[in-house]
Image 1 (spheres, rainbow, N blue to C red):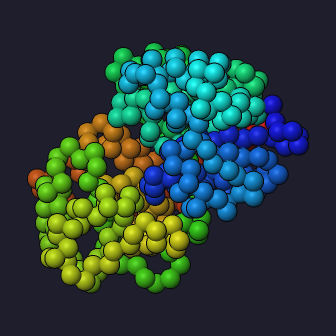
Image 2 (image 1 turned 180 degrees about the vertical axis):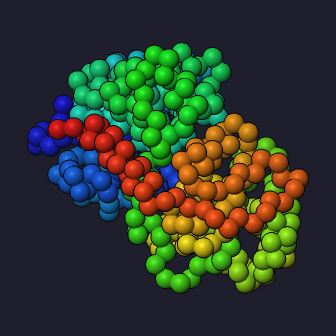
Amino acid sequence: MSTDSGRPLYYLVGTTGFPNYGDEIIAATWLRHLAQTAPDAEVWLDCPSPGPAQVMLGDLHPRVRFTDTLWRLCWEAPTDEPWGVADFAQRCVDFPGIAPRWVAGVELLARADVVHIIGGGYVNRIWPRHVGLLAGAVAAVRRSGGRAAMTGIGLYPAPAHCEPLLRELAQRFEVVDVRDAPSADMLSKTVSVTHTCDDVFFGLGPQLYRQDDDVREVMVCMQSDLVELGVPRLAGFVLDTLRDWGVDSTQLGVVECIPRVDREVFSLIEHELPDARFYPLSELMDTGLPAAPGQTWISSRFHPHLIASAVGASGVAVSVSPDYYATKHRSLIDLGSGWTMVEDVTETPARPTDGGYSPEALREYRMRKDQIARQVYAR
């Protein structure tokens, strides 16, 4: 274990660099934490797009570097079936010659003191190959003698016939922390699991919020991916809701969490909203989310719901899929966001007037995550 210099080697795994606002700020949360608590550690972040991740996040820890080894093993497995991907990933870590192009990365992984699957909802039925990330982490700490941990993870809905595999892999992790009740229920049959909240609750702070007055009264964040009800229908719902609420476009801001993907809905209605202010992801990463107390949000994305409600904004969470996104938004509502959730877009909702987490609740969630972080990075 550890590096030749004697520094601890911490190996984070997340779906960073795509880019996707939520994934980037989850990774940023842990890199900032390690910069404060372990600035001399060697930190690696294994992610699908290490180049963009380096550009966006590379200055958050003095010794962080980026790779994509575990993701490559998941992609190169000769099957889409998650049991087979898990088997392939473990065999590659045990016998790196099976994947000769990634031997150097596998040997690095197998020296880690901690392999930490950071939060997010990327190991589930939508992306079944990603079960290999958990399997590779298990194999790595079996070689190194280190610790495997997962925090703030959302595993629901599980890949078909895969719940026993997820439980078996999770049993090999020393820390298993999930962000939603269905994930906790699935694992708790055989695994010691904690159900806290999303990892971003651990990193809430002024760095996530726009500090100037360039914010609008009503904010929209609407995706076009994973939308089961159809993009035109979603666009119509947004436009009807804004009209029913009497929102003038001079009051409106539109946020993009994934470039282009989160502009498609707006592009269908922007001619009707000529004075709306568009905030691209690059601006969010540079200057923070334009969220403020007293705003009203309409968001299908999860992390704008979390971050805007944390600062006291009201909102409507729009579920674009009944299992994946409904579960995500419900996890925040159950924690006290005060938002309403819409799953049927045939009727427009009433404009909410009260919303946002209480300061006491936010302190509690931060404390829970702090306890988890101490377990993950116990020295």
